[in-house]
Length: 393
Image: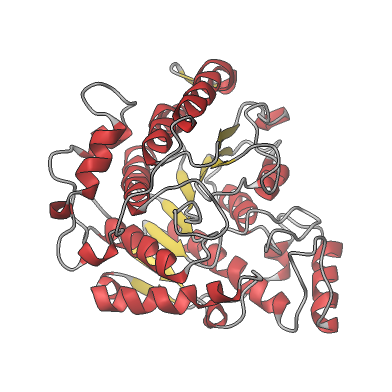
């Protein structure tokens, strides 16, 4: 099951990035080279988007903030609001490119041109309405939600699997009617320090902020348990018209910044599961953004898994019905069984076997119990606020 797939890619992605991890700036070129090597590029339409306009930026940011970013770009040095996010000549247009690509994705989906659109340069979820931080200048996710609402798609669900909490997206949309689900590493100290179970939204957004905080070294099985126990039920109850998947892959065990101990099996699961959910509840409409990921080799493999799943080039996992990915863990279909099936060499048809990890990460034995307690709290204390088995209220 697939639909027309587009890649929105701006030439500025090939230059300097926002992160001080300079090696990560090459992830876009390396990914596109791998797309070509694997033949993925023959099944997608690549589109060069325009830069975001000021009117688009002000969907989520006051004009005074936009002008401050422009003025610091002109100075060409200094920091924005935190030392990790610095100004340099051209940063304003580079940020506009990221937002412009996500806005092009919105247009492609709302106009019915593509069912699935991937912007590898998007997912800048740490940008607040008036603060640039965490390598993020403008929040393209929040801008996209506002634009989709203006286009008549008012029920938008964000599934954010980046290893860091999407604090900026949460802040901007906290009282909005969009569903915002975030799975992330959390201990109260790990950046950005937000994303607890108790942060649930207010006003029109009460009960629609759904944080799934996870301990260090969670591992793949506990991660899948958490996702399968909560995310499909919440998405089905909310019944969005479009899903925005923030596909940050910094939770991979080879990434230098996050310590969730996930593997390529996890990201293949996430691609399959979110793709299935989009077709089940949102008429296939799905916008995907790249977000975090600081090892270019890992990023290019994970993004290749994503696109090959969306195009149908990476075949279904033998022995598992598509719907079983979306069922809560059970004795019949455990998360371990899914991971074992995905990890089987026969599950990777030619030429995609090269995407597999050399070894699977080892979780912390205590992390599973911590995660299970968190899942229990969410099911019993957060989902009933608005998202219940009886449907969205």
